[in-house]
Image (cartoon, rainbow, N blue to C red; front, side):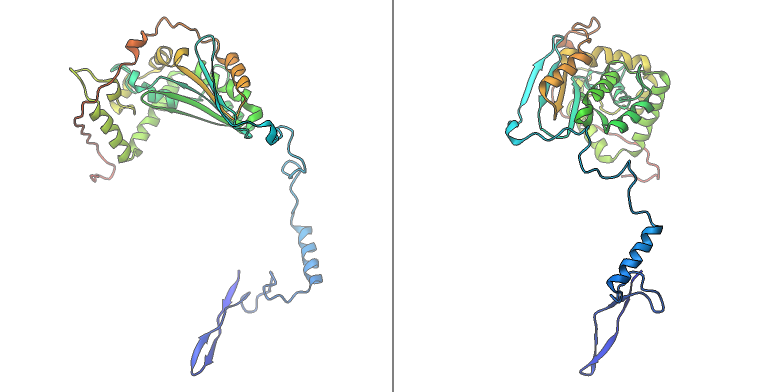
Amino acid sequence: AEAFDYEDEAVDGGKERKAPRVGPPPNEPDLFDDSGSLSDTERSQILQAQKQHIRTELDSAHRIAEEPPSFIPPNLPFSSMSVPETILSTLPNGIRVASQETYGQVCTVGVLSNCGSRHETSQNTGVNHLLELLAFQSTENRDAQDITALMDEIGGATFASGSREQMMYCVDVLRPNVEVAMEVMADTILRPRIEEADVEAMKRVIEFQHMDMLPEVKLGEGLQIAGYGSIDGEVQQLGRPHFCPLEALPALNAEVVHNFRRDHLLLPQEMVIAGAGIAHDELVKLAERFFSDIPVENPNQPPSEHRTIDSKYTGGGYQLQTKTIDGFTR
C-alpha cells in the first residue's frame, strides 16, 4: 500500500502544504520502487526472481493465438458486401421467413407467432404467461440442463418473450453454430416435454414474480384493462390480463398448456422465422428442415375471424388493492 506523507513548510510567517511524498510507510520496504531508487539491473533481477515463483504465462487452452480460431469465419471484403436489406420468403406450409444480412460474427434467429394473452379464455387465463416461462426447458430430445450446457458450449444465449398479441423465441449465437441453435429452438417450440411437475414449478415462479412486481408494471396492466373494458358483459381480448393472476393459477395444468400451444402457437400461417446476420438462402433451408413438418391445416384451430377479434377502446376504471410485505401502502 502507498502512504502519503505531507510536510508543512513555513513561508512568510505561514505554512504551505507541499505536494505529498509517495512511498511506503516509514521502516517498510519499498517493494514497488515508488521512490525510484533501484537501478535497471536491480529491477531486472527482481523481475526474474518473481517469474520463478509467479506464473505469468497462460496455459495452452487459454493462450491468445496468433491466428483467429478456425470456427470463426473470416470477415468479408468490402467489395463483397451490399447494403443490408430485409428479404422475405414463404414456405409451402405458410410460414414466412425474413432475414437481413448484417455481416457480423453473431447471428440472431427467432420465431414469432401471433399468439398472446388476447387469445386466452376465462378457463385458461394466464396460460400464455406460463408458456413463456416454460420456453427452453426440457424437450423430447434434451433435458433443460443439457440445453443450458449446449448453449454454453456453442456461445449461445436463449430467451423468450410473451405479450398480448405475440410470442417470441430467440437465440443469439456465433454464426457457425446457427444450425445447432435452430435445432434447439425447433425442439422447444415443437417438441417440449411439459409435465405437471414443470407446470407447478413455473406456477411458483409466477407467485414470486407477483411478490416482486413493481407498481409501474401493475399500473400498465391496470391501464390496459381499464382502457378495453367489457362490452355487454364480455371481456374484450385486449382487456385480458397479460400477467397470470394469482387466482387463475389453480386452473392451469400441463393439458391446458398443450391445448393452448396446439390451438394458437403452432399455426404456420401465423408464424414468422426471422434472422439477422445470416444469409437468406441459409435461413430458408434451416426453416424448411426444422419447421416444414408443421401441418398447414389444424382441425382444432378456430376460424381466423373468430380467433383474433378487434377490441374497442371504452375507457373506464380499474382498481387493485393488494397487501404488502411490510404493511405499508404505496
